[in-house]
Image (cartoon, rainbow, N blue to C red; front, side):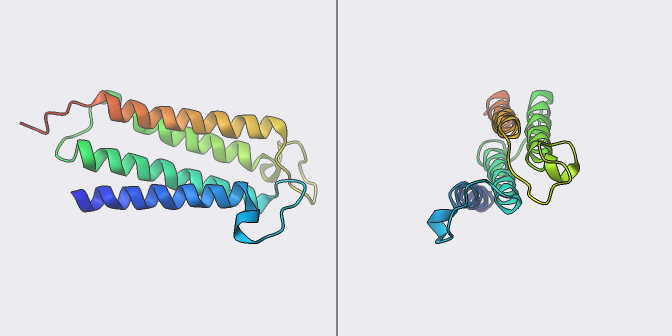
Length: 141
């Protein structure tokens, strides 16, 4: 089970790196533009999804490997995944047609979209925290 927990760490680290690459494209050698484009948004969203997934895998297999999830942990999982879905909706709102520039050729991340993205990520992080704190550490003994 420790190997799966290590995989969770690797997944979370990859997610953090992808998120940083999306937020700061200059660290990869690309010239940053004045606004955040759709490719950066998708990279940030993919990184956040990997980060939250890696955290959930790590907590599950490091602390609660031989246990079924209780109701509070299931709520935590669903809250984390709901936060990721809302982050994706907020991030690609222009593409979906209800953002600040719907149907325009240029998709940018507006202030309300950024607020929604950050808030949704905080909700997803809260879901991971609930999952981690709601279980019992008796490991089936």
